[in-house]
Amino acid sequence: MSVLEVKDLTVNYETKRGPVRAAEGISFSVKKGQSLGLAGESGCGKTTVALSLMRLLPKAGRILKGQINLDGRNLLNLTDREMRQVRWRDMSIVFQGAMNALDPVYKIGDQIIEAIRTHDKEVSKEECRERAAKLLELVGIDPERVDGYPHEFSGGMRQRALIAMALACNPKLVIADEPGTALDVIVQAQVLRLMRDLKEKLDLSMILISHDLSIIAETCERVVIMYAGNIAEYGSTPSVFHEPLHPYTQGLLQAFPDIRGERKRLSSVPGQPPDLLNPPVGCRFNPRCPYVMDVCKKVQPPLIELRPDHYVACHLYPDKM
Image (cartoon, rainbow, N blue to C red):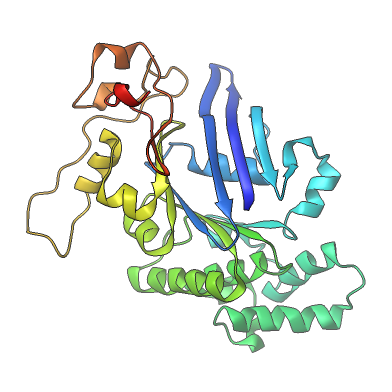
């Protein structure tokens, strides 16, 4: 059974120049204990989807349609008060950029305690402090650092503290938005290993957002490839990585070095992502696609199941539509 099921999620940002079509027709599911990767270039809608799931969109953000079903309950039907009870207790998020996500004038322990007491007011502050220290220990930080301020922690430790805060109320689902941002490769590997270990240890469901395909490959069982606010491809990680169907997915993988394969010059996807104020008609990838056809410039391809549990939105496969 799916912990989270997203159906036809469509999100716009209202601007003076018109609506930015940030995410359209997004559908996927996450089962208990499963990890899903959201991958794609910057500006493709990954963070918009994450903030929509938490209902934390900025003021200009509008969810136009769709469903976000968490344990069978559509979060879009909840009031703001009811949604506050869902955040951290049922679903939590590790924000991109730990220094910006933590309040610099409060101790790390106090920020974790606040999350706990918001959802369990009967727990004493002493018990909360003890839980905060254990959470820090769980993510590999000395529990004695519970009284430390964010500026006293390194970048990797702040990221671990954010993960500890996300786990404070034992949520079913954790969303990690670019957890390796601004970290060197060694610390990034440690943080990702920690998240993978916590997922297995606590049987967590997880959504990992990243533009780095190697992180998705190491961490996630399933992957969604997004392009310009649409899903280009969706399926199990081995299937998508070993047999990519969409030209965009193929381009992303060709731009990534294979340490086991023969040495060859890497290629890149030509062109730039489109302006989502005025996206291309039809398939949004058509201005950059090496296989573009007339139909690509007129009709947006639907997301179809071309292989068992492997979906693609591309006119190269008309016989299966």
